[in-house]
Image (cartoon, rainbow, N blue to C red; front, top):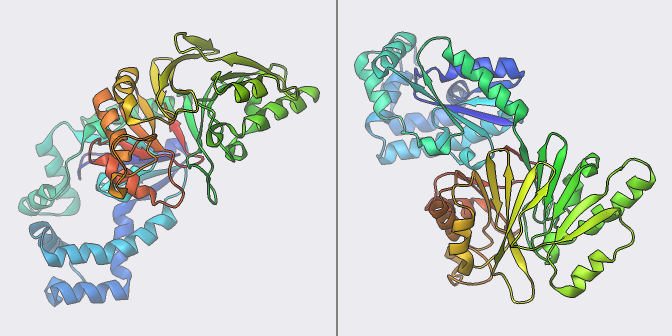
Length: 438
């Protein structure tokens, strides 16, 4: 998994990041140091000189980053500075994409203002208890004047604490190391949510149709199993597996038969001792009967009743009947695990908005379909939600995280992110094989 650590200069984020990476045996990535490599590229240097002239050089004829910094911090909205960022960012992204890999701790002040913020990562903010002490530390560490330190600090960003999983206050004592240990305990003990599929009505390349897997101490619960999603599933997890189908459109249940047949084969091989447990709607009747009467399976079938609460292993499950299309019965699903709540909307119309807001109130995670975009001119009410409407539901339900899914395969997922982000701040784009800590 990725871990993002951010905070203002002098807050202690680098000390925290290095210690966390060491304890986890993760790669430590200092983005500031990667940024320095930008100035080693002759093409970039030529463009910077064209913008700012040779007055930014030091006595050795090399760029004086403090001189350049004064211009950047003083003239952030100028055309020159905007051009500077566009020139350097493209090169910087190439460097970052080669550096940022799974099992990394990324130390970066500007993370929340970059496109990397939409990706799944554990987000940690380090704050200073004493702002004057923080600035004093910065001036000494970087050999700055107080005026320059304040100028640089003023140009820094403000952080929305609601977008972070953890916010730690650095008292400049041993507490910071204790906080690292608490993060490690959380990573080792938290339930997980793994993305197995995100696209609809078909999938391209390394994607699949919607599917999400909960795991906690070898107890597994799968919500939907759209076309192709089973290839991202570890079949060892068939042991103690529950499967919930939100509705009978093929992009949400096609792979159910793979699991059913696999359960039979693995039972005959004496690998699977207990049947898988499958929860399904009872409409359309023909599909319900087909699944219920399937002989080539080692499973128990339970018909969903939205007036009942279900207990499966360590999971408490609730259902909400939603409006989707006239030919099927569709459910939103709430999973309560320990003291955490995750809600999955399934596919639904904006007509279900008020019911969904009540159903998802104060949830830790809302996995919401966002099939459509307002920018494409879809009507406000149809069979699916726009990304903007997903943001509205998340905001009014006061959830902590919004994970978007159910993407049109030909659409750039960044467009869904931007639209939802206009309404709700803590937005993530679901991506196959991503693992979220709950």
